[in-house]
Amino acid sequence: MKLSFFTMLLVMLSTTLFAQAQNDFSYFKSYAGDYKSYDVLEDKKLKPILKKILGKEYQHFVSNLDVIGSVDLISGGIVLEGNASHGGGEEMAKLDVNLYNGIVTAAIFSKGQIDVYTDRKDYKKQDKDNYINLPISIKDWIALIATDLKYRFDKPSNLTFK
Image 1 (cartoon, rainbow, N blue to C red):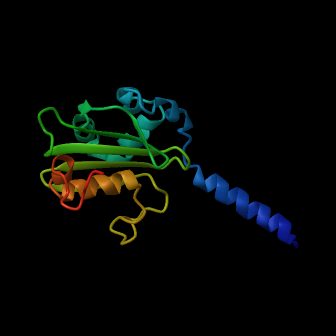
Image 2 (image 1 turned 90 degrees about the vertical axis):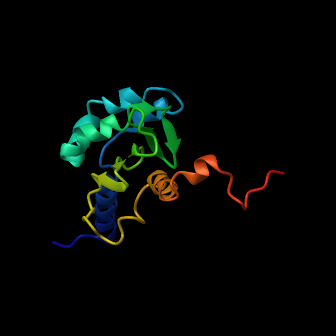
């Protein structure tokens, strides 16, 4: 059976578009800037994904989001960041739910270690490309933790206000 170039192109594009939308979390966009963090965490579609990717660390993750701010929108992702009660700088967590491709990425900082979990389809544990493919919100959070939160509180020496 011969397929035309147009038919093959159409099939490839539809497969690509389908593959890009792992989950549809576009309804979270309305939460940005609001304090509906717990609504996000308890969402009936998101919660099972978090339980699956985090496994036995699910409750640890939720506990590390006990003290949490507003829902942020960062580079196409709905983002939650928080820490355990009285655990700022020691027990922290971050969540990024991409509104466009549906990829869920969660991270836990505990006992000096950062662990990242994702439902990204092409994810392979310990792959050298994992870091580069993380959402920018997660990478920035990791960089902040790597400096012991220094730049959250101390002005960098190369910063001037004009």
